[in-house]
Image 1 (cartoon, rainbow, N blue to C red):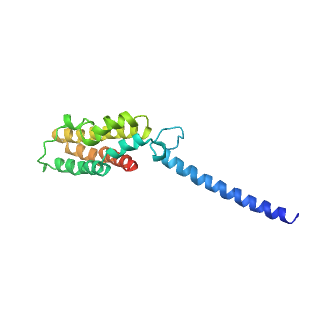
Image 2: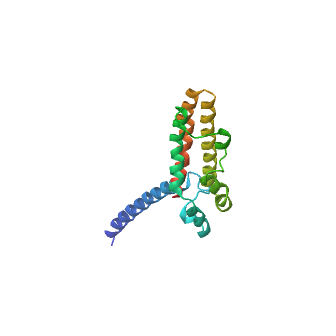
Image 3: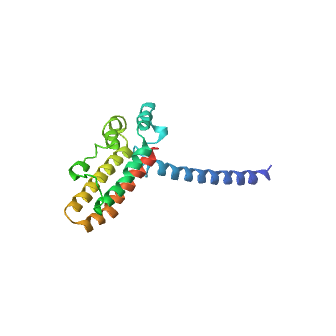
Length: 170
């Protein structure tokens, strides 16, 4: 019997090492889904109620992404003076007027407002609208170079973040 003990211990060690590896992978996955703060409230399908899932499904994520991606083209055209649109910064700066903004400040806020991910999306969307309105303001003031820098930096970053949050909802 003493011959089998080392073999069994060896198998046990291998099993423990595999389990530790699996736990490490699961922790990394958990951090990717929920963020590095395990106590934070990010939206994940396993965590939300049927009501909350229904609210998430009300948003046409694809249309929201397309609309926000299209802003870069609209602003670029405006910068070059080729736009026929009446873009007004005092209108664009409001983050509650587009379909995404109406959803964020309406049903999403009511049902999902406790989640950090939604709060971050609201903040990024607000920044996105603010950056877009500033691109228009700078262009109208004749500061096209500054507007272009903002479009390629601050606006681009806000746009990418909004789109990332939207894709995470899908």
